[in-house]
Structure formats: C-alpha cells, structure tokens
Image (tube, rainbow, N blue to C red; front, top):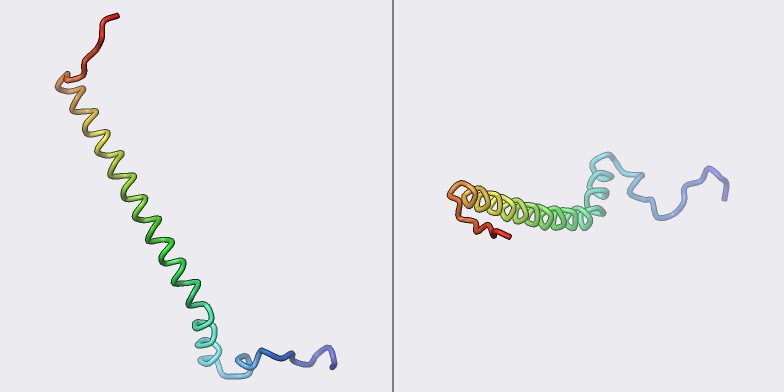
Length: 74
C-alpha cells in the first residue's frame, strides 16, 4: 500500500457533493438532536430562574413600598 492510496471506509468521499453532504448530515443527526434537547433544557432552567428572581424582586419592592416588613427594635 503506497502512502498516497486511499484507505477503506471513505467511500462517501468518492461521490458527488450532494451525496457527501447527505452522508455528513445523516452521520451527525444524533448529536444535533442531543444538542437541541440540551439547549431546550437550558432554556427552561433559565426561564424558571429569571421568573423566580423577578417574582422575588417584585415582592421585595412591594414590601418596602407599603412598609409591610416587621423591623425589630433591639
């Protein structure tokens, strides 16, 4: 085997551009679906944390505006 001969397992590279693109898309589809699920979970967690923090700020500001907090005199 000369050092310039093609190895086995790369038959998709001998085909035209569309066949090679189809092979690349097909072979990476699993990782793209996993990335999509990971980003959806990250988005849901981000939305939840922003919602909780916003509710905390709204409640805290309403308590301070209406003087509903109970300061203790020590």
